[in-house]
Length: 250
Image (tube, rainbow, N blue to C red):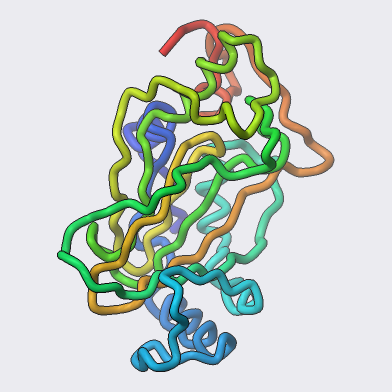
């Protein structure tokens, strides 16, 4: 049976800029993808001598091993948030966060950012959502995604009021944010859906195992460029459309 977001989850996406779908990837798929990924990158999950020196690594060569995790169930949830017109079924890029010494407490990396081209538009031109799939149980101190709730609206309204359609890189986070960064822990098989304009960061892994995450996007379909809406929400608007409403200030 397909899983769909409940109304309160849709509201969280609209207002906070992210929502988590627990246990969307079945355990056998998680285990199979994780095993194939480690084989492809030539490391062993249980052997620190095979790990790199740097704390976080991205492994595009293992992209094909992640395809089972970009399932119809994931794309059904994407469609609920952004509508039917997006690029479906693409895989992920494994992003591994390796354990480092330190107290078992959450600590964000420097480098908070918004994904996309350096000269971003306030409306989506390349990606609609960022998708993170956890393939390991990940506690707050274990290297989870860090998100600044509501930052998508803060950024959108701030730059719209300034009359900017495109946002230069150096001005992207020149915004009076309402909330602090917070960790988004999860369990293996959970998937986080992030609004394209939500500010986020990585965090340090102070757990005793590698955090395995998969990063992907839900991209704008080339035949269906995003059409900005104006004014209050209308019938047929998606949650993404509603998050970009222009009839109110945040």
